[in-house]
Amino acid sequence: MLNKITSLMRYLVQSLRLMIGVPEYSVYVAHMKEVHPDKAVMPYEAFFRERQEARFGGNGKISRCC
Image 1: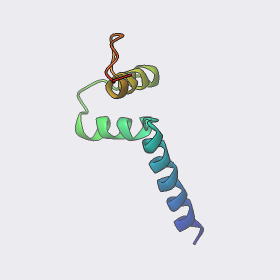
Image 2 (image 1 turned 135 degrees about the horizontal axis):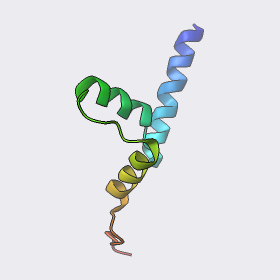
Image 3 (image 1 turned 90 degrees about the horizontal axis):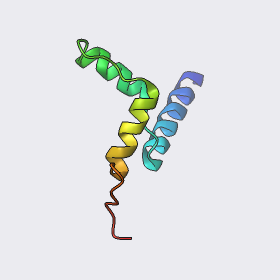
């Protein structure tokens, strides 16, 4: 029972993070190790910066109406 509650809480936290735009670094690392073992894994800071630029636009450009 406790195991199910823990899994549910983990899933809920991950869902909330995705809703507000906080990237999940551990999921990225697991994906890179499994699918792209020949490529280097970005450090957390570079990963976070890349995800923020992908979401909000980068290079100082504003990609929204106001």
